[in-house]
Image 1: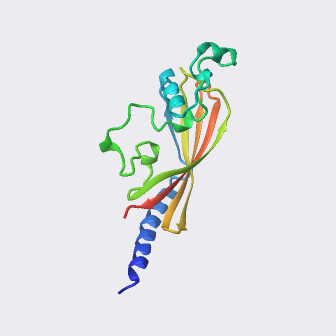
Image 2: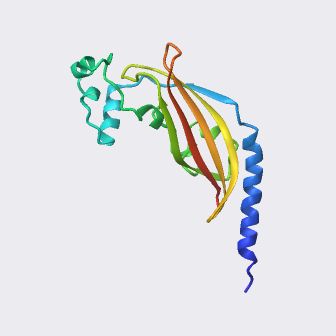
Length: 181
């Protein structure tokens, strides 16, 4: 019985990820900007309910106003959790891993991505009726080795700016990428 199969598998993973790493590395530092749609009250409230967060400033205009908000407030993680601002791409436009946002613009064919964390800095108010520009930049990419093999670690920096140009939220998101087997 041969023991070369795991070594061959490791080499092919490393080769595939190495090629992808070189392509993705060239995208580090290149910003990509999109405008959000108008944040709708119903969307904020659905997010709050799905998050089991029934703070009245998300549901009651009067309570939001007496709490210092100029309209219904958004739950803190709302902006960084939205994957798209349109109705959604058709399934045929999604990658195999289900990604269809700006990450799909990266040269990562043959690599499945999975989000593994966020570092968030809250800097301003987010409320119903607002619209934002989101600037996303691939901050870093590394090849790592773990118990289950080789993987890419990608870090995406996002800045959410309100219509006045003020940054209201910064988010650094980490993704693990593995070669499809």
